[in-house]
Image (cartoon, rainbow, N blue to C red; front, top):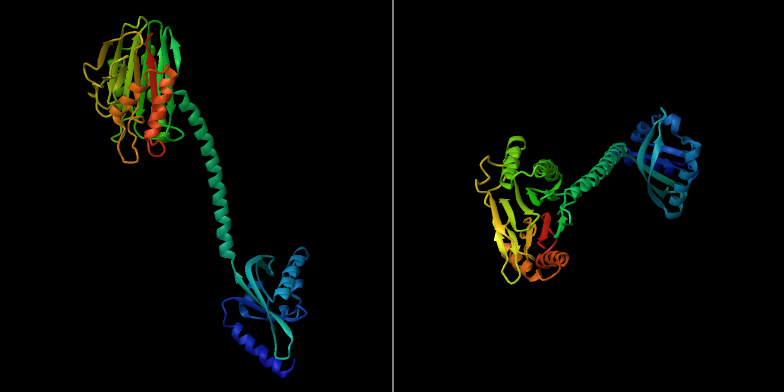
Length: 382
């Protein structure tokens, strides 16, 4: 090595010794002719063990083709940047980002300046993040499976369309989320037909779980043909005693028709008014006499039940507030009166068509997607 080249090498070494990265200098034969202290620490060798050796000799045979290809790309482009590793004396692999650039000494000889930045902490974080993501994905798949089951359970609580004697029932249920807090029952017995719609506050799985539990109590009461007011009192007492929460409540509307269809009984608690529709007349509202359920023991009125005569062709509409609490682009709420007009206009349709028209008209009024669960039950008297 001539004096000019020796002086040049010393200048290169002074600069590289100040860097916070590992640096080596390779000659045109790809032999290591210089390594700074940081690189020697990375590779766990001293200068005597490293200098003069071809860089490829430091790597396992299976990784040499990849290394030589990266070196070839540098030779073609004049520079390169890539992720690789430094083989350590103890058998470890230190992950690094490698940057390399070709330079010439004063005599025109070609060298490669190769820097290595330790990215082991980054790789460790990536591995931990990958593991965490895999766990999250597994948990998400589990939750999706559980949610699908919850949806099937929730759909089992939806009111059903049916015919009982001459009475026709059309029902619809749509949760705002995959599961919701509405449930309904259409339950025929030997001498009467019971219809109930319930709206549990909130949305999602917690509301659906509560709705499921109240549904079971409701079913037991209806199967025993308990008077409607007494049934509401039982449901209220059950929730206050077992599920009480200051932010939780539910509403309900229940209808009972005897087989002769001469009269109906209605009982509501904190629920939007049901509508009794008769040809040629404005829909009559059947108002709730009792308050919100699940908060106070005395929520159900002593005269909770309304009795009304019915005529052939009469229809009764029971629904949850997901139908009325909808807003248009002007932020005007449809409300009970808006729904009343929609129901009146649709009343000349067959029962299934009336249900469909009501839902379509409400959707046309609403700006944006539904934000609350929707339950609808239409009953027609023969």
